[in-house]
Amino acid sequence: MKTLRMEFKTGAEKNFVVSLPYAKDGLTEAAVTTAMNALVTQDIFVTSIVGIEAAEVIERTATPIVGA
Picture 1 (tube, helix red, strand yellow):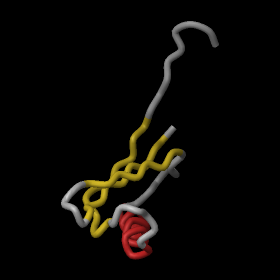
Picture 2: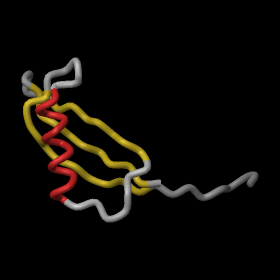
Picture 3: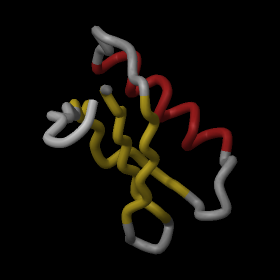
């Protein structure tokens, strides 16, 4: 499973993180930046986000040890 992790700057000089599971393959910097800017301008969170800090795609795999 791939997770898109987006980190924003807040008005309180802290970071605010949004993680979205099931990220699509082939995400581009332009697409993610556009989405992040939309979240900043829409002001939909209780915490006020004022800018973009970073974004990354995290891939996780699980290896069963016991059971199936």
